[in-house]
Amino acid sequence: MKVSSGFVEVWGMYHFTFSGQEQLKGIMHYPFPLDSSHAWPDSVSIPGRRFLENDSGVSLKMRFIPGQEESLFVYYRQPVLRNTARYIVTTTRRWDRPIDRARFRVTVPKNLPNVRLNYVPDSTVLTDTTITWLFTRGPFWPSEDIIVTWN
View 1 (tube, rainbow, N blue to C red):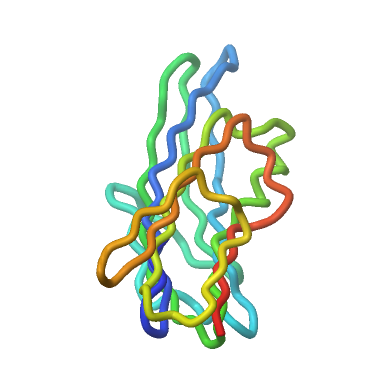
View 2 (view 1 turned 90 degrees about the horizontal axis):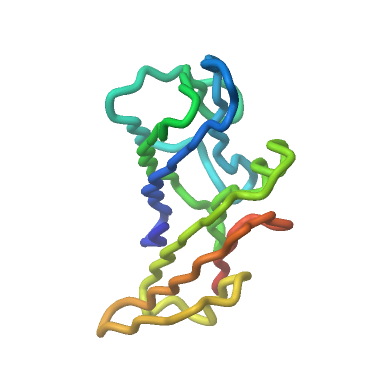
C-alpha cells in the first residue's frame, strides 16, 4: 500500500491453498473501500484474469484444486478525498478461519503531517522522502482494516 498525493495505490499478491477433497469453483469478491474518503478506483488490474465491476468492488472466477496453490495479483489506484487511506482486510473474517500469514508494506511520503498507522509495525524504514512500515501477522484474524491517517 502506497499513499501519495491524492490517491492510494495497492499491490496485493494473494496465495490460496485449498485443503478440500474435490475441486472448488466459485466467484470471489474483491472489495474496495468506498465512502466519503475513498472514490472508485481510477485503475484496476488483475493480470491474467477477467473481472466484473460491481457496486463495492470487483468479482472474478476462481478455481481451487486440492493441495495446489492458486495465486492472484491485484493492483488498484484509488483517489482519496480526505486525509485517510484504508485497505480492507476485515472481509476475510467471513472465511471462518484466520489467514495463515499476511505480510504488509505501507509507504507514505515523509512530508505528510502527523501521519499514523493503526497497526504496530514490526519495523520502519526511513528514506529522504518516505516512511515505510513493515509488519507480518499470522495467524491473522483482523478486527480492523489497515488505516493510515494524517492532518
